[in-house]
Image (cartoon, rainbow, N blue to C red; front, side, top):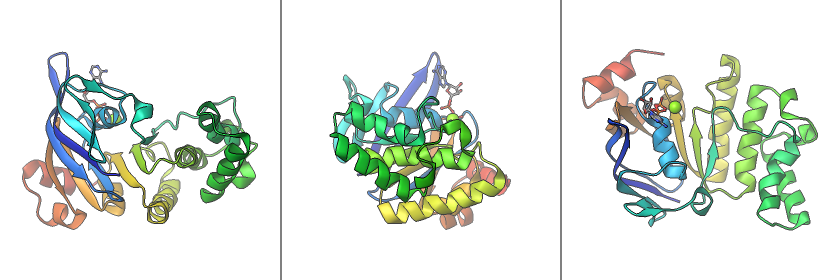
Length: 241
Ligand code: ADP
Ligand code: MG
């Protein structure tokens, strides 16, 4: 699925947290939004997923308007899966239970729930952890449970808000590779948010630089690096992290 933002505005109080943001994420693209803390990244993701209403402009998913003046489709009507930094797993349920629960509440048959849960846990290589609780898993494994839960619901578009930020450095590298491999295998349109330029460079088909609520540049990683459009982009990309 493609995602289009057309002159999107979000205001909190007197602060324009997103100021006239326009971008299109192509079907199957791994699109990274990169910017410093507080620049509006999470707000952008929450507007797309439907957790937050917008104050101007419009958002289209696969060409269908999901948010605009007087229009706000609920998150479950948008067909996108979300993976948050904190994973948001249910602590009292097993790994398999976490993956199965949204399918059960969506009214899928018992056999289908079992089959999809098994398939998706296999995809993220967690089959042997199916009966554990989230507290018994590592950060990387929990992240994979959250990913499996997205997959099980058939999300062909996945939004990820700093999903690796809580992981140990050595796990991050491994998870980056897994995410890349998973992206290639699934072809899911992916919006990945981070403040880490190295991570952005490693993962992105395209990177969009967000700065104080404005989208400064959206380009392939090499172009962002070699031809930054202004000094904010140059400064942020050049500073290391
Ligand atoms: P990022 O994810 O890039 O760190 P956020 O999107 O979380 O940035 O926040 C952008 C700005 O909007 C920040 O100044 C933050 O304080 C403000 N903000 C975010 N959510 C709210 C809210 N619910 N109410 C008021 N201000 C908010
Ligand atoms: Mg954030």
